[in-house]
Image (cartoon, rainbow, N blue to C red; front, top):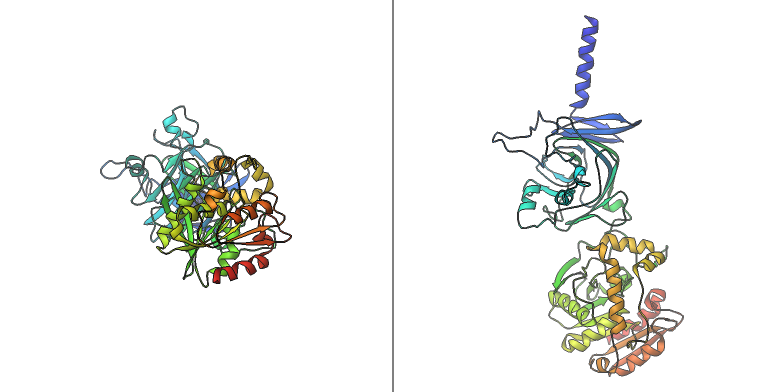
Length: 506
């Protein structure tokens, strides 16, 4: 009798582990929703095993319809997550009882709200990653939004496959999922890859949704999880919305405002074939900031934004292919850049604007004032001299850029909606400047006052060319900043500001 009683007690204890309403793993406490879960030994280490509980949520409903993309996860307790990073290692196997349509479904749910009545999810179908059928391969990664946008609706309606994609993966192998969530966008990185394999730009619950995080499985999956790490935005120095860096930024400089990925200030405008990102700060007379090319970003204009936003309306624009702006499909030209800037200006104000442009942004400023003289009332142009084909060979590559500043390029890849087009962007900018002419014809047509600035040690745009450009502009002023190179305002801000401030107020 004793041994029979003991056996029953042990059996009850075993089932209570599997069906427990909460469990602890890696220092986290989880609630269980429509799954069986337990901490188990796997190849000598403790991992979390999760399966869909068919007693609580059968395959089919009363009408015989298969029910999928449901709240079948273990959910962290007492967490309110909006933006940040979720990283976890996952491994899936097929249960012996798995139906024929099982694919090893495993992934992450996030922003779980209320009584699990809404959430977003990104998950994997590992059997598809190496299938012989290309159609199945194309469905290796999936996004869905519960309850209204499950996979079948996203696949069948007008969305044309943009919520699923291919990546190499297989059953019975550990896969590192890193999900970066920022507003309405999420990016998935697999196995510590440099580039995201999957991007969703319109999370269906919006950019202000918040909630919990869950480890998710579906029909036929024996899922395993380990090494869960959650980094909320405010604690994550690599999150694109926090402490962004400019190219070649000295380590002692801290950018307190995330210029270039600030949800509170960020906007988009469609400029013909590209989606242009910009941020707006302050109120007053509008000032447009145009950053440099290739290594350019809104962060490099942070001193200008900080000093201007108290008295002016500052409109800081990401050039196409840079930061959060898309590249578009047409060849890059200065006229195109000027039209992009004007699309942003028109979206913000009908007033004429002051423009401050650096390097590539300076050339765009010249073109903008030449094309739209009634809309530009004053300009500051830094590091942009007279230019014609043959003056300088532009052949810089993305690989060279990565060697020079890998941290900045990695940040760009995380921010940009088209990270796989980085090389294309570099090639396009170089092709543009190898053909462009910035000389008397353009510059003499600029009617507004222009302060032309340069560092006296600028190797790319020597002082002689900058002064030559200025001499063609009817209403020009010249300011040369001593002991500085191309980015004179980055090397000696006080001297640059001492020239810019009186010019703006004159």
